[in-house]
Length: 281
Image (cartoon, rainbow, N blue to C red; front, side):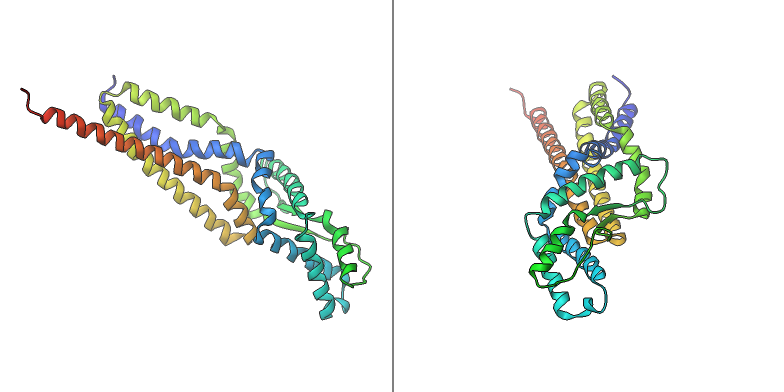
């Protein structure tokens, strides 16, 4: 057994390490793993925010390729919008979205693991594989323009240079920590309880401290979302929401476990108090 001040110090360290450990585990499992990341964002191919962003980019590039004065004609603009909507709403879009995200994530990992972010580094979703389909759809809409979209910018930006620069430090720190921080947290929690003089009181303190730490982590995720919303397009916010959803679920589950432990500790404490106060015959 160790002195009570040492026990409380270990308890504080354990509670402070919990949100970092959860974030590190989520980061390694979802954010840096390309296959898991692609699996996470793949369902967004049907999300209105994503399809609208893709359609907007394809429409703008197509009108630019058509050029003036034809691109200014109402029937041409309507035909382009219909053609693009047909392609984005078809079964062709989900596999292109998935494949483009895989390439984009691999490039993101390369950039973030590099020495530094340079001007021009961005995370982009390339919709170039849809170019031929858009051209074919234009003909069906009666827009008889000879188009070559192969040299056009058909990318949708998810994160720009500034956003990548801001995220690189956290990326490196969490990447190094990996799954070691959760292991360290587990060992520290065990050591704290095993060496405590009053284990029941220490368990209750860990539960309360964990709930407070998890609340701070939940707030940090919300602040991060607001920062993304303030500095990026809606598609980046949508990606943020779906990627961090597993972290939020982990926070809620952990909070539920901590609350259950706290309630159990209170119940046991009340039971012990009643037994001590009961008259003996």
